[in-house]
Image (cartoon, rainbow, N blue to C red):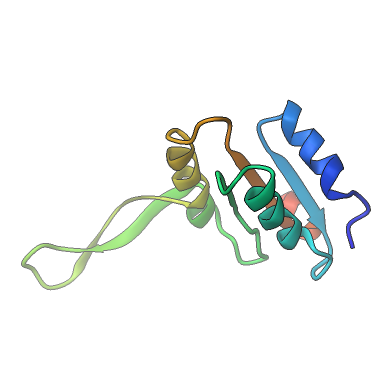
Length: 111
């Protein structure tokens, strides 16, 4: 289990716009984030998970293949990643939404 409890994380959220929950796999980071979003924030929020194969393009955004209308093949078009989609959704959430990043410690250095 994480060394910090749900109450401490909720208190951190009260004074910050986001919180990174880091630690080894299987320690309850995602479970805690989802539970806080459901209980404290009444479902107003998102939990985005980092995995070792998370890329900048899948997290922030980048070019992604897209079908061409009425043509064979595809082209690349800008596509939002998970963080950008969460930011757009947060614009419509009142009061303050919750955004949690449960991630494995070893991949923080990628960003």
